[in-house]
Image 1 (cartoon, rainbow, N blue to C red):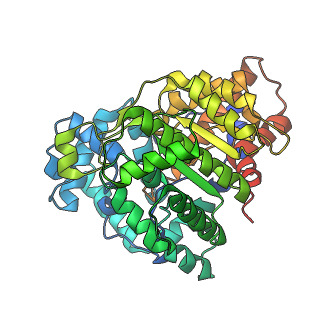
Image 2: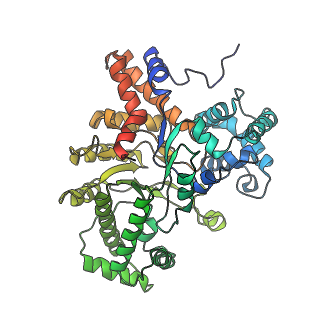
Image 3: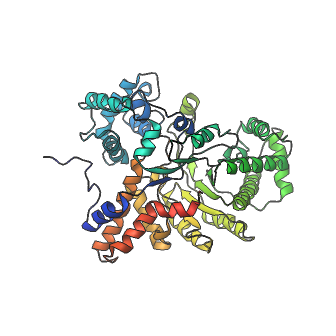
Length: 467
């Protein structure tokens, strides 16, 4: 009998790797501390009409691959029906070998729908019917979280969000997963965006404060942070194109805010100064609340102006930025650390050339407050694949301590993304197992298994202190 493509020892290339995965990593729960799933869909226990709805809607990874092969946009984001879109994706899948999409596609089909055959044009109809039958048999959002033993989910939420769906989830005694908000104040930081003033008006409304000057804005942000804290939030998140650091006084930042509020032009130095002051203010606020700060650095977004105009953001037209990071990163962390105001921080980079920059910078600001207080975050976005994960973990191990790593997260909008944790754990076990087989680590499975379990779940559970 032919072995299925996704088999028990998939990616595990040594006996040590197999032992570490099957005996230690496989059964660990999932702590998904950063994702983009919609809490409303959990609160309402959403079901899905078909596999395209849960699998293809909103997945810009798949959209980019389909565009590369010349698939008509109508079959990607357009008005084609869901079956047509699934059939189009099925034709693309065989051409994705070498891309993580090939692995993810078949892992998701296996883990959610117990499909062992490969997805292609010929198998498309059979897999479409089979997956839809499973979905219609009760594979809802809450059931998925239960099936994958997801203990914690931290969504990504704007300060103006009401958090009503988080409240509904908390009040639902049948949902065993802890679903908590994470604070994402990017729109208050990005003062050069056209919608800045419109956003400030929304923030004023929900915070019940009049925002006429910079001091008012900071008070409103702080008030919303306390509101989030009352609803279980213990993490923030920032999407930053390049990390700014410029010396700036409160008076200067206030004057820059006034210019933006008046609709006046802001030059690049003024923008950097405003962002520096605001991000430092936020870092100190997070420290006072006992939160973790997440910095996602290095995406250059919406590069295709024609398609951005047509489809909007987050539709597959973003890429990797190149810039100098070492000096501003160390200066930013140092400025907070000077008065012991540096919160626990996770730093993610999109450009892998920054791996050593981050892996060495975090070592400058560790302390006895936490195991791995400053973290080099897991391979993010374009690095969220086997080689990217291996490079991130190997670089962290070489320059820091892999054993203190808080591990994987989905960073996904899709409820079908939980096998990414399995994929990560297999890659991790294969890495460490390879060290064992090469004689570079002892064949001490109790020692190594404990490290694997910590990276898989325990480190995150201790680090974030979700009570």
